[in-house]
Length: 425
Image 1 (tube, helix red, strand yellow):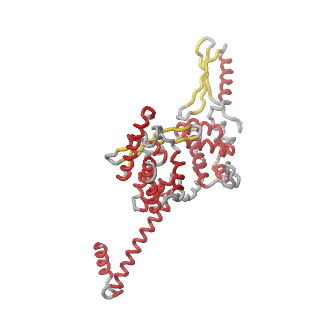
Image 2: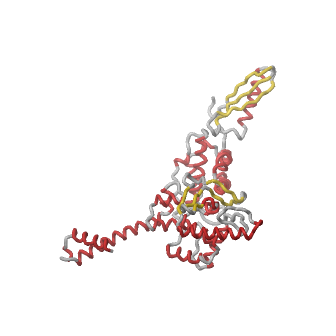
Image 3: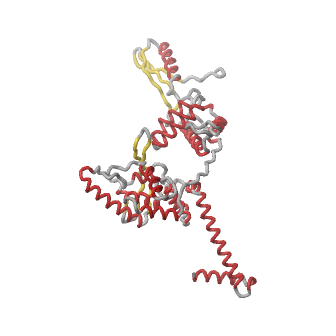
């Protein structure tokens, strides 16, 4: 074979009857790793004519955009296949739309024309660096993309090339050899304990439904999409638990959709709820039953925790729009509804709750995710530990200075007195 000449597909003919031949062409491998075979039955006067028709069949397949030979497949062609075959069936609609927009606005214009198997780590590095330049944004704002957004681009590219490897189209993922962008250290919006107390006090003036919504968000740490999917069947008042199995959210061009918790294997979880929150949920349920009786035949029959006055499912983005208005009305510092989840986590951490328990409650797949998100809260908790030890050391010094014999008193005796003193306290 001459240098630069592309290897032709392999095919063969099989005589099936008088003037009838079946053409079979081996056309690479499919997503399941199995060999793809294209077949066609043709009419031919003899073997020679059948061979000509086989050659034409091979050429037709090679020119088809569906043929996934890396020597012919562009990044754009494979990315579109990845969206259809992997992303859309497996990702949440909002996530899918975000990835699709990212590909259409940034990645495909930059890498789309390149041959899939010729994209190297250097091309990925150059692409990600281009996102750090002024003018990289597509929303009309000035400046580069944030490192957090660039990390999302990195993740999408990695997923696409991982699929190419899994589907036996490529042998290696070039993104795996590129250093991951560092995520921006976000200033997580969250209330401290004093602000949280003020928020709960203001909540007493709101409808029982919104009292239940905020209390549950604070004491459970659930995501908004998880709260919006809850039904009364998920609440066990006797055991004091809530079972999280679904999410419900709104996405443009798709509408409201519900799906099982598939974010990770720990998204499905059983959460203990404090009695104070259960009491508020009970009052909310009674109020909902009263509304149901008042509505009569107009009641929509929903079993959701959170509904309209006629029993229709609450729109998933209602908490997003209601919460800032509630804070403003009561003169409380601005925070988005998701900040309640962060508040729940930071308060638990500040109270010394084990990080693994916090992570499990939040539904994180890995404890490292919780540590990464709440690093600042963990540092504050660690500082509090240091302050406790510092206070113990100071108390010990005071005991030594004021005890019999002054500063030269036996340290062992000082420790004994200090421990005894703390036990008495």
